[in-house]
Image 1 (cartoon, rainbow, N blue to C red):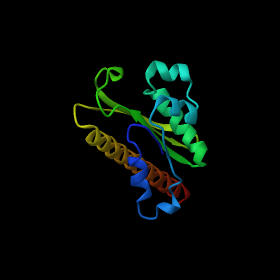
Image 2 (image 1 turned 90 degrees about the horizontal axis):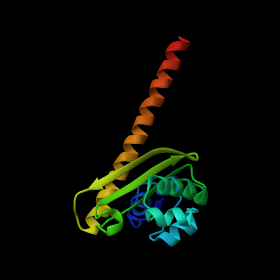
Image 3 (image 1 turned 180 degrees about the vertical axis):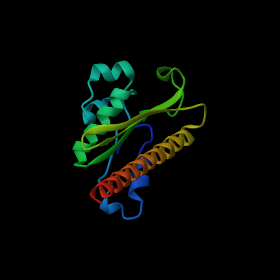
Image 4 (image 1 turned 90 degrees about the vertical axis):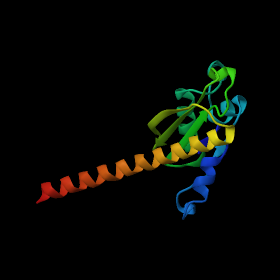
Length: 154
């Protein structure tokens, strides 16, 4: 996990899951621009231009955290939990999921209102649901391929 706006909520969710020891490697929460550029190798000039909230930033975060933790999968998230001028006073986040060094999903979540904790929780829940849906689609696709191969062999 590479988290910013969710401040470790995704790490909490994964670390408390049943048998987490078998699949969860760890995570890092880098909340400010300086830490994101340092730990995720994001170009400081670009980081300043977008306040480290963009598709490109979250993609780099996801790929770098995979390397840091020697993991097959990663999830990264960066955004705003309270309205600030840098966000145009809007609540939104970008998140990305990577698998084997490739970004496989990147999406934006926008919310209308909420206190920062509610917003962080809503982002975390949506990301977890999206990751689960992504895994389920992959599982269904693998089953279809397996059935198709079996039909060809008969």
